[in-house]
Image 1 (cartoon, one colour):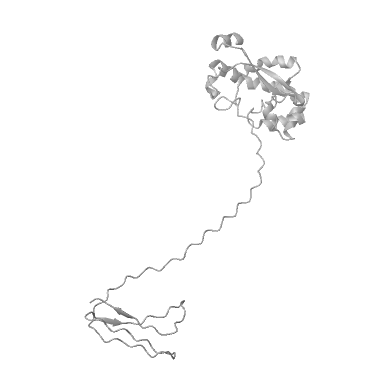
Image 2 (cartoon, rainbow, N blue to C red; image 1 turned 120 degrees about the horizontal axis):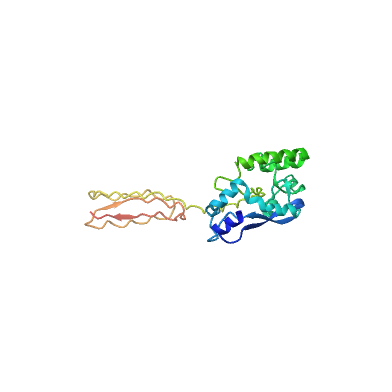
Length: 255
C-alpha cells in the first residue's frame, strides 16, 4: 500500500537507497521508502521537498520498513545503533568507533530514549551493556515510541549532520617585522613676515670699530644722495670661513 501511494503521489522510484557503514566498518546499501521529491536544482533544500506522505511515513517510522531486507541479508540487526554515513564515520574518534562493534539495527537504545538527544552517548552505552534482557526492553519501548513519536527529526524535518571534529589549529606564522618608517624631514620654523621699515630721516653712517687685525681697514663707500641711507652691521656667518679683513656693508633703503 505504501509503495502504491508513493507511485501515485510522487512517481519515480519507490525506494531510497544510500550507502551506510555497518559492522566493523563494512559499507552496505540501506533501503527506505522515498519521502522526498526529486531536486529541481542542485541548491534545492531538503525540507521543502518532503511530501505530505513522506512526512507521515517519517513520523510513524514506516519509511524504515524496507530495511527488513537488510536484516535478512545480515547487514543489519533488529536492535542496535542506527547506521551512519561513511563521511560521518571518518570523523569518529577512537571511542566513537565503538559503535561499529555491533551490527546496526532498526531500533536501538537511543531511539527509545529520545532519538536525537545524545544519540552517540546512548549508542555507546548500549554497546557496553547489551544483553538479551536489554534487547527485550528496547522492543517493548519501541512500541510506545511508535504510538507516540517524538524527537524523530529536527524542527525543519531534516536530521542535523554529524558534527565534524575541530580541525587542528595550524601554527601561527610569526608576524613580519614592519619596516622602519621613513625619516620625517625636520620641520622648518614658520617664516615670520617682515615688518615694513618705517622711513627715518637720513642719519650719519655708523662707523665700525677698529679692526683687530693689522691690515688697513677698507673705506666704506660714500652715501648716495638724495636717497637716505642707513648703515647696519651683518653678523658673521656661523659656518662660513673667517674673513681676513672686516667687511663694511651699506644698505640703501628707499624712502
